[in-house]
Length: 448
Image (cartoon, rainbow, N blue to C red; front, side, top):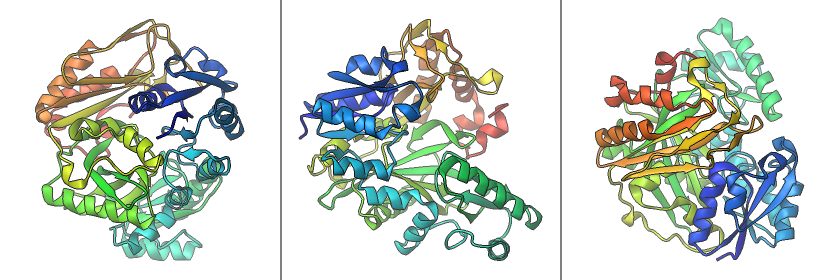
């Protein structure tokens, strides 16, 4: 096991990783920008190191400064959390060059899964179902028109690189195709530095289901069931739950097998997530692989009892997984609400400022992963996530009731938050019935 690791992130995920490390007897190093010098994650770590000015490009994304911090403090490994450098294969390779262990998958796996068109091709070869579409990226308009006509409109134009909903366009008919490809390509080029796009069949109101996997360097792969991530705003997740109300035991087994096949196909190790679309007929299709720990990993931890971050650190240290597939059991139901500094009443306008009141909920089976407190300054430079409120219940109805109670106990003043949105969702009859899909919020919430 490592003696010391550096956490190349901020906010709640930095503290989450540090907590796991502390339980393993591993010391931690926090890094911080000028804006974060008084942030909670800095105080929680065993030691902290400055890495530059407030903008992320000059600090949390500045690889030389992070490597320098690791070398200077004697850290043996770097955990990237999620976001920032977590899916940067170049960073993973630089860590290796400097003799630092990257607490994540091999750089080759990150690279392959980061190119969406390449990932589709590899999944097809591995026998994992993919949404009908182009074999690779679009090379010319004639080919695009042929493929679109063959799979039938509506279709999606999707960026081959990147994520977060950028570089995606829905095309209803052939007259819209050329412009959609041009706009998606331009947006992808601007956002990710690569304008390649591919075509995919558009599915009508599918569910977004993801399977959590953990693999070690000894050939062991374990799947930890599914999470439902259909509640999204502009393709950014808002609420997640485990398991999914749309799942059957047969479907869970099939999707878990597909996820394991996908992980083996890219020689995967560490924690990762296979994301699928599930249509109304019960057919599922590979969408992408997130080669990192996800924001919503606590849902899976709550229903399986497996500490995913501790397993990540163990695997990176060369140890085998501490669990087998036979030991994995999903019990009860978990819901996670992302509490962001955004105003739902003002079309989710960001709400930077100083938190004047911060009162977290408590009680049985309530978990709050946060890095905010009274006096905390919500910076305009970074993601607006303040906390993840996670609950567990014996069934979905109890989990909803517990989340409703916890939301009522959560008091934040000084900045606007998405707590009112989550209260509204807990009262929605369709949500209570589990009748949800990826366009659920857009159909019900103004500005979503």
